[in-house]
Amino acid sequence: MTIAIIAVCCVGIALQALFIDREHKKEYTAALILKSCASACFVILGFITARKAADAGFARFVVLGLCLGMGGDILLNLRFLSEKKGNLIFLIGILVFLSGHVMYLAALIPMCKNIVPGLVLGAVFTAVILLWIFSQITAKPAFKIFGVFYIGAIVIMTTIAIMNLIAGFSVMKLIFAVGAVLFLLSDIILIINNFGGKNSKQLRTMNLALYYIGQLCIAICLLFA
Image (tube, rainbow, N blue to C red; front, side, top):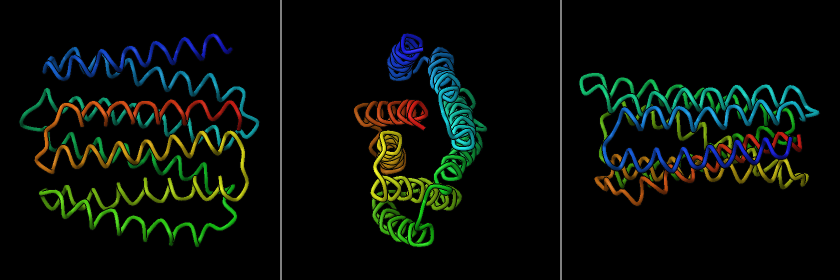
C-alpha cells in the first residue's frame, strides 16, 4: 500500500512537471494529455487511500471532489484547443471545480461543531478576498459572477477545514486543511495572473504546483480518516 501511494505521487508530480513544461511551450495537445494523466494520478490515489478510511461517507465525498477536480483540469486545458469556445469551456470548467469544492465541503460539514459561525466567517473572508481581487483584475461580468460563487465555495471550505482542525487536532484534519489552503492560494494566483494582466510563467507555475500539491494532500488525508 505504502509503495503504491509513493509511486502514484511520484508519477503524478513528474507528469504535472512535464505538463507545465509543455504548456509553457504552447504545445497544448501534449499538455492536455499530460494534465489528464497527472490528474488521474490524484484520483487513483484517492481510490487507494479511501480503502483505508474508517469514515466511508467522508471518503466518498472526497473521492467525488477529486474526480470533479480531474474533470475541471481537463476542461480548463481543453479551452486552449478551441479559440471560439474557449471562454465557454473555461466557465464550464470553473463550474465543475465549484462542484468539487461543494463535495469537499459536504465531507467536512458533518465533523464541524460550529457550522453557522463557520459559514458566516467564511462569507466574511470571501467578501474581503473578493474586494481585493476585484481591485486587481479586469474581467467580464460573467467571469466575475462565476468568480463570486467559486471563491466563496473554496474560502468557506477552507474556513471549515481550519475550524475543524482548531476544534480537535488530527493528522487527517491537518493534511486536509493544508491541502485546502494550498488550493485557495493556487486559485487566487490563477485569477490574478489570468485577469490581472500578469500572464507570468512564474505565477502560472506556482499556481499549478500549489494546486497539485493541494489535491495530493486532500487525497492522502484519507489514510488517516
